[in-house]
Amino acid sequence: ELYDDAGGFRQAVTQPIGTGQQFARYLSDPSLFGSAADQAQRWVRGFVTVPDTYGFWLANDGSTLNYLDGLPLGNVRDAQSSFVLAMAPGPGGFVQAILTNPYQQQAQVNLQLVGGGSVKAAIPFTLAGRARVVVNLAQVFPAVTADDYLYVQADRPILGCEVYGDGQKLAALAGQAVPGAATLYCPHVASGNLGVNYETRLTLVNPTDQDTAVVMRLYSDGGILESTTPVIGVPARSKRTDNVAPLFGAFDAFTGSVAVEGLGPGAVTGAVT
Image 1 (tube, rainbow, N blue to C red):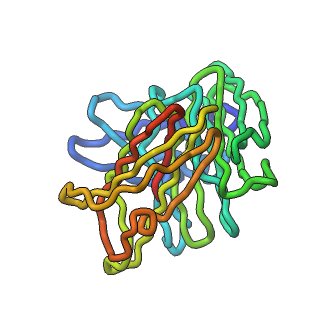
Image 2: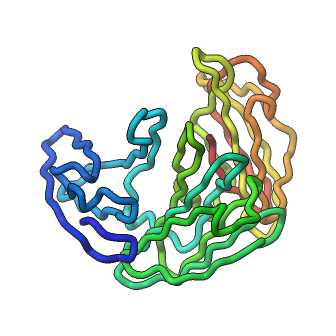
């Protein structure tokens, strides 16, 4: 089903997919929605008729294909009433927050720009049933910095993600649940010259009203503990971003995983780019 950003139903199509097959198309492909989907103010809701059917979306620049990233297709059960969008634009970059209401009933949403221990700005608005809003952070919050993050609250569960980057690269990040787990895991990090020069940045956000602290551990691909950080503080309503290599004192090329152990009383969520 194709919808416009105001929540209006535009078109529906049924597409069979054989067992074990993959179906990959632009939404504007004639086998799907054609020209009706060939504009930015559209989103799609899909249904599957058999279990164990999965999908994802990808975005690219449409010409040179210099970048390609996306996320798993959101399930209505993934909708949340509060979540964190960790990325904010740095110099020369952009961040767009995309909020979708998958339900027929309208949602009251409060979008907060947070950083440095306080709420710096807030915008309440109504998101109509089956509607979507795309928020350019630099336009809506002119004072935003890369050290800020978004905290989203709604009176009914909604879906949220971010698309961010610059003219040469793009990445997507789903909304992060308000933290509850004591330990977070990053299954893969890479740094140094591995045929291509890699750099991994770890972002931690403490959206609670209590200061917290973490200890982070770097493991090799074989599960060997390679390095442990000292206790690192993450103040209430704040964010920190670290380059993984100097964080762990590792300057040779490496791949591995990271565990972030929260020490309380607050808690963290985060992302890896």
